[in-house]
Image (cartoon, rainbow, N blue to C red):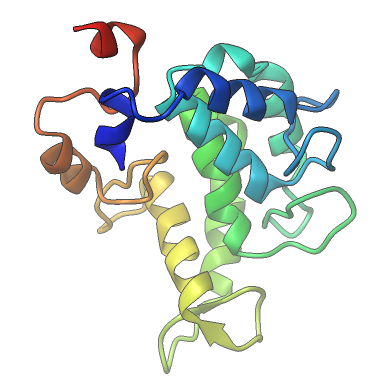
Length: 186
């Protein structure tokens, strides 16, 4: 699929223009133009714009502030205002902040404590919230969030591709990780 971007098979300008139209007054992104900002969609939008070489459509400080406001008093993150904290947003929010260079805007110690509190110490896995049932979805996003925060013993993860950095480097093997107009013209 990524070769399709570089080979001119996908109109990256039109794709990124559509994503840009989904941006809201609060700096966030909805699923469609005018849709409510949501952290999961923001990860998707920021990742698509980053891969498409179009991060200039993002108001980094405004969006970074909106994302940081997702941190609750309990240390976890929610996906939109007035919702419960959930481990999966450790990935959605942190990955977008990492791409924007604003990862340090989150209270990492509080978030790490929240994620670890959602861990089943006996059976393994991570749940959405403490004392809930663990599942693969929340386990992946909890571990990925911990990795983005540099948690000891975890390999670094790429915030755009949700893969270990070493895997992304091997897959791209010297090719750029993002689309640029110059690559298509070459």
